[in-house]
Image 1 (cartoon, rainbow, N blue to C red):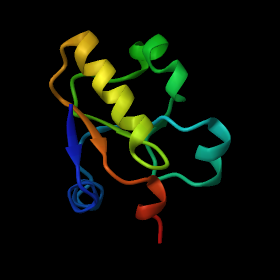
Image 2 (cartoon, rainbow, N blue to C red; image 1 turned 30 degrees about the vertical axis):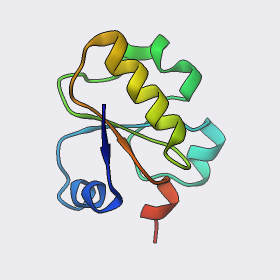
Image 3 (cartoon, one colour; image 1 turned 90 degrees about the vertical axis):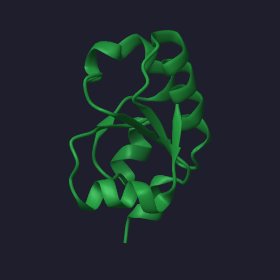
Image 4 (cartoon, one colour; image 1 turned 180 degrees about the vertical axis):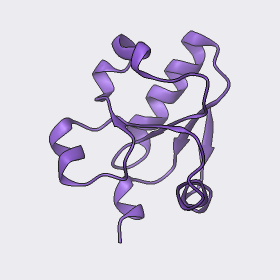
Length: 96
């Protein structure tokens, strides 16, 4: 699991790189404010691995970066995937 700084993730968004963005916040939080990607709440990620394209870099995001870091670490450890990232800041940092 690797951490992305705000600037690194912003570049990925700006250049529309082919990545899998997973927002692990609850559905109501995602509906209120999101940066795109798929919404799979934290407690459902491991049960829904079939909904995640593991052939692309996987980037997890949340409100603060803590929950996304936890699930990114867990996913990388349990699956052996090396293309797993977390964004160090919350999604609100990317909405103007």
